[in-house]
Length: 252
Image (cartoon, rainbow, N blue to C red):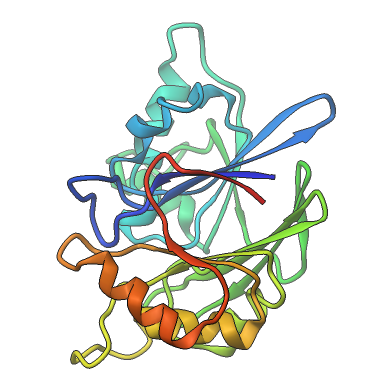
């Protein structure tokens, strides 16, 4: 499978990147199946640089903070009012109440809200299929309902932290993963609130505990120097580690 970083800025769009959004692609039934992980603020415009957004097959939202979901409202407009006609309804997985929250974000009546464009589905407790991808969602440590996502396809495993503090669920999500896309929003030694975000050192420690084979740090807020997170992660993780950058594509 192939991962393209559409947006990797933490908490809000930065000068060099939209907020969280990642494109996963894999060949499926004679064509390329396209899955979006999160659609944070500013991401939809950047997505146009890589694909025609009408070709997206499904969306997974880790949680409902704006920097991970708000551009779904623009995606609704694109799919509803496209000049070639309304696009087919596609599935959107997310936390409970995603359909109502997205409708309110765009000031729509809840009925129909965005339900004619998107098939909103709550994450199940068991692994489920999205085209060629096998997805397992686990609740992680964050002030709102938030999920880490484990995605398998083509014999490979991608783990995505979403937003989280340190927790056993994150370790299980990333267990033996080939590629661990993990947030690093805090700096060691600061007065960081618990169960909100990870430092670079904590991201490295989670990857080490999980036995992940490769670590890519993401969700660094614009007020921090990403090199700090990278240096911290090198102290707690011996495998290959790098910083996510908008437009980068990885073959997993």
